[in-house]
Every structure is written in C-alpha cells, then in structure tokens.
Image 1 (cartoon, rainbow, N blue to C red):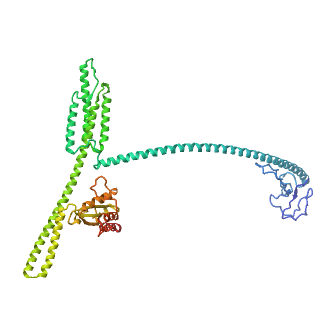
Image 2 (cartoon, rainbow, N blue to C red):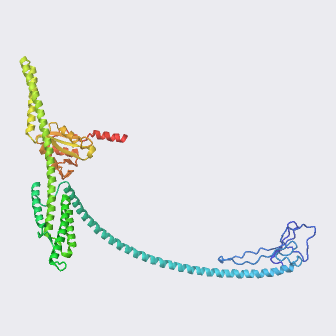
Image 3 (tube, one colour):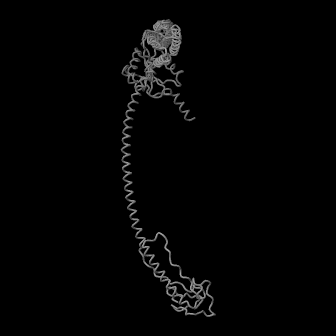
Length: 520
C-alpha cells in the first residue's frame, strides 16, 4: 500500500512512534495498550504546500477533491472501513494514485479559472467602455435637451416679460382712470358736482323741469312722437286690426320705458347720473329688441328728452344740496354773530354800570375834599371809558377779532392743526365750544392773538397752507396737515412778533388716558 500523502497519527495514550514510522503489514497494537479515543483517525493527509496564483477569484465556487477518508481504531484508512489495518500499504498506494489524479484535476481547474478570469476582465472592460460610451451619449443628449429647454424657457420668459410690461402699462393707465373716477365720485358725493345745465338757483331748475315734463307729456300722447312702429301691419287680413294691435303694443312698450325712466328720476343721485343714463339706454335697446317684429321702438327724440330730464334733475338735486350747505353755513355764521353781539352788549352794559358807579364815587369823594382818592378813581374811570371805546370799536369793526391756532393730539394725532378766528370778546369760549361734544378731548391752544384785521390774516394763512388742507372740498373745514411751527412761521410773517406761542401741545387728558390705559 502507498502512503504517499498520508502520515501515521498515533493516539495520544500510545507510545510516540519514531519520525516517519509506518505500521508494517499485519501489525496490531499490543493488548496492554489503552483503547484509542472513539472515532480516532489513524491516517491523516499531509497538508500540501500552498500554490501561488494570480488568477482572479472565481465568480462561483469550484468543486474541490473529496477529503481523504480517516482510519478507524483498527488501523483502517478513514472512509474505507472495509479494509483491515494489515494491507494498508497497498491501500495507501492506491490512495496516493487517486490523490495524484485529484491534483491533476485541481491544476486543470486552476488553469480554467485563470482563463475565465482573464475573459471576464476583457468582458468587463468592454462592458465598461460600452457603458462609458452610452453615458457620454446620454449626457450629450441631455445637455442638448437642456439647452433647447433653456432657450425655449428664455423665449417664453421674454414673451411673458413683454406681456407683463404691457399689462403693467395698461394697469397704470386704468389706475389713473379709476382714481380719476373715484375722485370725481367722491367730490360729487360731498357737493362738488359738475353741472350739466347750470342755472342760477333751485327755483330756476324747478321751472325748467316743469317745462320739460310738460313737453314729455305732449310727446307721450298718441302720435306725439314718443314711440315709432311699422306701418301696414295686418291681422287676419285687416289693416284696422293690425293698426290697433300695433297701437296697443306700442302703448305697452312706452309704459314700460316710462316706468323705468320715472324710477330712475325718483331714485337719482347726482353722482350716479352716468349709471342712470346707461340703464335707460339699455331699457331703450330692450324695448327695440322686444318690438322688432313690428319695428316698435322709442324714438331718439323722446329718449334724448328723457336723458336731458335726468341731467336736469341731477343738477337740481345738486343745487338743492349746495343751497342747504350754504344755508347751514349762513345759520352758523348768524349764530356766531348773535353770540358776539350778545357778548358785546353784556360787556358794554357791565362797563356802563361800572362807569356810573365810579362816577358816583368820584362825586362823593370830591364833595368830601379827598382829592387823592378822587384822582385814583378818576384813573379807574378813564380805564373804563377806554374799555367802552374798545367794545364799541369791536362792535363797529367786523374784521377785528382773535386769530387762533389749535390742535387735538388725542383726536387727530400729530401733524394736524386748525386755524380760525373769532370775534368773541372771550375767544376761549369759542375754543371750548369746538372741543365740547365733537371730539373726545379738548383742544390745545398754540397761539391766540388779537388783530384789527383778523379776517384778513386768517384768510391769508388759509391761502398759504392751501396745499396742506385736510378737506379740499369744503373750505369751511379749517384743518391742515401742518405743525404748530409751520403756523408760527406764517403768523410771524403776517402779524410780526407773536408774544405768546406754545409749540408742544399739553394734551393733558389724552396723556392721562394713555397712562391709565398702560398701567391698567
């Protein structure tokens, strides 16, 4: 038996054999030797020297030669239990021959692995090159598509930008128009109305409207020219019945038109004139459409007259409001004048009583010979005479009075003042009246001074600050977007030195209210 590739493996409990010892044929261990461990392999393969290789690792496992069978405790080689220990030399030679065949097969497989590994490397390189080329082609295609998209988007953006600029321009134009219309409407609502047919007063408008409505009644009569229709219409072959039908339908159509026109006149607001005229135009068009079969329509002459009526009515209503506002202003001025006259009368009466009293005192003292007291009381009497002259002057001179500059921080905030004048002998009474009920806090006085031409100074200050007016429609509202310092500059220029002027408002109640609101 050949033992090439195997060595004897003595159990650890047996005496150690010499190096390279092989049991002779028919050898058995002595009986006094201990039993080997269960499953002990007496023949084990000699580990071969490692074979160096540069071949890449195979992608799939390669079959390896079957392991050399171990021997049993009887000395039989492993994997061949049918062969006794004696005769193992022959069996070893057979196993060595088998091992030689396995080594040859292993070398063949290693060579195949080298070949397959090389082929895989070539294939991988080729596939890598193909993938690189496909990637470059796809990248180029994507770049081209991206460039095309970029150019397309740029063109679209340019188009949208141009359209936006055009729309912005149109919006600005419309905003100007809208603002103009809104301002016009607002001005009309507060009384600045552009008259269509200017007349002197309300009575003149009433007379003109009465004449116009008489003319409209005449036109609305049969054959008055208010409505027109087709001629030669027949019903069942009868022209008489045809004329009757056309006449009845014409009356019905005219009644519908006049009903709409009368409703527009009754509910007319001066600033809604254009909308009312447009609505009447649509009513005329509706009548013409409904009566198209018989050519029934409101005549242009009658329609123009009714449109003229709308314009004249709007003018009349605006004039009524204008005169009402003028009457309110006149009544307010009259009340103020009456208060001034009453105040002057009371002051003169008081001064006359004081003058009489002082005159009696002077006579009594002169009779007693107290010349020093007489001189003192005569000086007081002269002061009273001067006061009476001043009151008489104020009563006679309608332009004399007090010019005042006031503000209300709590009601109007900073940057707003009121500039006015009063002929009252006690001007603070007028200031207190202004702040009594119309505003939550009283007014603060920045300037209050007497002038022989208070009316002129007030008017000139209003003119100089006209661009800062809060209400540019009703000029009787004397509020301005200005500061007390702005008013002081104008007062110094118009009246010279202003002896007393307070630039910062005290606003005591407002500041106390703010403090209470903050502290809770």
